[in-house]
Image (cartoon, rainbow over all chains, first blue to last red; front, top):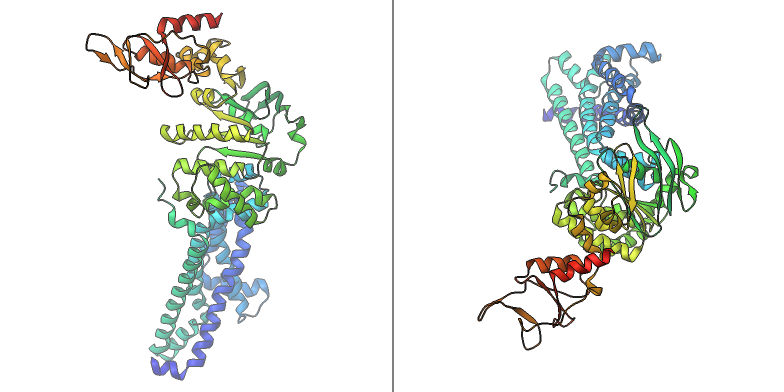
Length: 216
Length: 336
């Protein structure tokens, strides 16, 4: 494995780099898109259930099908990485829109009410009070989305763009175990690191959650 | 002054929460809305800062209809305290208190400095400043809630069952501090409670609501205890209202008799007890000064082994006695 790595270090590194941005760019885009959608699901109460249903259906579309189907809809080339980015963004939105809605719904009405009574206007109340209080729930969803994306990118290798997934296809084609092992280890490592980074961010931005549950 | 001008609130479901209420809440005083649940007291309170809009009628603060004012700006000028305090869990105690000043455009630094002073005012040590609400007891959270409402120094404060979520000992303490603070600050306060004792203790004016959002009686605590408007109010203020009404007057004008020989004194003239037999001296059970309430005097007369309350001066020297029948005569004469 070490020899494989040293002989192919450039190809492996390129695959890893591609894997990272293919997985994380959709997390970022998906999060930004999911925020207003999730908020709408809370703001307009009757939208919540349709939102949950649509999200569930979207998430259940097999990734390979989406990778193949998207070029038809978007008019992109079948080998374009854009297909992967769009597909994973859809999954992320499906996952996070619901998480954002659930997070906002988990905020104690007493807290929103007292914020209103202090003189918060709606938008500032959302940014200053509701989102921060919902953050633990939202960040938990973000961890799931990030790890899921990191594993899904590999599927893209079947249509020729798949970061570390290319190591799997290569290994299968050559009946050669080394690249497969390297691919697996690197994806797991990547998922672990990404997850750990989010946990660290969570600790830093929600220090108050450490005392929850210890209430007298 | 806060004015309710023929205010009605009807909910779409058809229930009348507030039924033609007209009231005046005097400036600088505490007005307590009290009544059974579903009597419209909280709805009335929330119409002051437009958390609820009246179906008809007007609510005015110093002559200005609140309906014409920007909601957020209006609310920043009105302190608000609720049960369980409703603190922001993600902010430290200090930043919770700094909330409204920051909304009003103060820098976070300025607001925090002022907040630190306020914490002291409500009886919280500076080390609480950096803690989060979840690290505080219920009583401490409630103090932070009061400090947060006071932070922008609003002339008007609304308090919705502010002390009902804490145990009786802490509540007693918070009551004392509330009275002390209000004596210093003289805010125009509207408070809601379901506890008539709390209303009588804290209110300068008490408004008793009955089911259906109707005001049953408005008056000072003394007036309500002495002269309930009807059966409902009499029932609501409770059976021992006669005894409780004695809490509002001091013994300053209560006549006393000279100290008799049966009262045993020490060299400094302080009472030791009553001589009830040749060698039998029984403790007095306590003494009062002319600044104490008539309720204490009545209590002492009842507890005393001889039915006589003993008055002392500032040095603790016995300077008079009041037998219970003299107290009864005084109360009867006072009633007219």
